[in-house]
Length: 417
Image 1 (cartoon, helix red, strand yellow):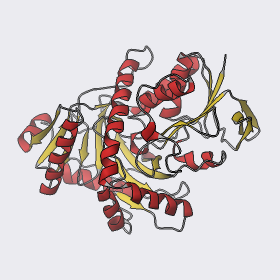
Image 2: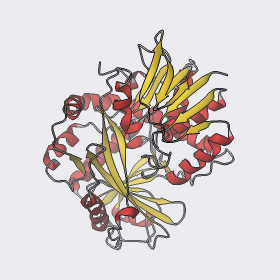
Image 3: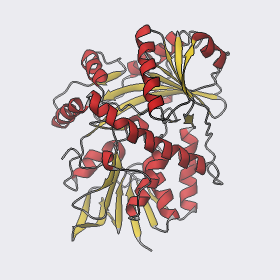
Image 4: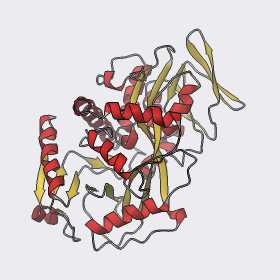
């Protein structure tokens, strides 16, 4: 049986392991931690074809400069002298054009729809029940400018075939959410979207995969590779060596550092996000929502929970968490949902994690040109969980050298040169 070593135990790595094991590979997944502290746990749980607009847009560049000196802002780039950040930032700005945003829409839609279809298949698998609900997502807005932008988004969604995307009046919004007051003038309703409880999904995968024969290796940070004949023959993690016929790099926000060990330059920066989860929530909402002006996400989860999440903080892994950013999330919730009184929890009750942000907002999915047995799958930014199942299927197709379920040229690993 041929051996594949997957580096990274987030949703991308575990999903890849699931499909590769099903197709007959001997699979080992190695993780620098214990599989419990990556960004796949604390996210909003969205599985969302609606997110066809990448992070790199002209608007976010303008806001980024405006917000750079406000550490509480929704999009914050920590000012510092860092050549990796400078290089990434220049590529990000060059990517943030209307033409490139338009070109990104179809591939982001296609991989999201593929992923949603795969997740729905997972729900029919014994042992994989992760509170999946396909009921839609609402984007709530408070200003005329946001309403105008929403009208343009509806038009784009319709052109992309997401025909069940509609505008909601204030009255229609209130009918969808009768349990609480919402301070808004209307909303955009993406009926195509679904959501799940990420913690349950990840814990079930960590039980399901070993039972299926996948080896999970904890606390094994990759320190090097042995190469021979244009291939990687071994993955080195400290004093451990893992022989491999194929290697999958699903290293999340550490993707740039791991890639450098193979002399690959992948423009990627960690973007930290935060979330707070109310267990046995005294408040009730029916639908996941995005607060447009607040740039905050709310998700009802697993029957009795609500998760509040948001912010994009381009920073280093070594920067201590900023609790004022969490307060900014809760302040935005209060502005939209005035009946929600959610105090700032103690630090140990707050989750934060690092999303792998590519320089153009598109993931890196594909084979490496100079190493014939290395596949990369990272750079999913805020869409890691949403695109997780689809990416795992695509990785399996790449490793098995069969036609892929969709065109992968927009996600080429070495597209920046």
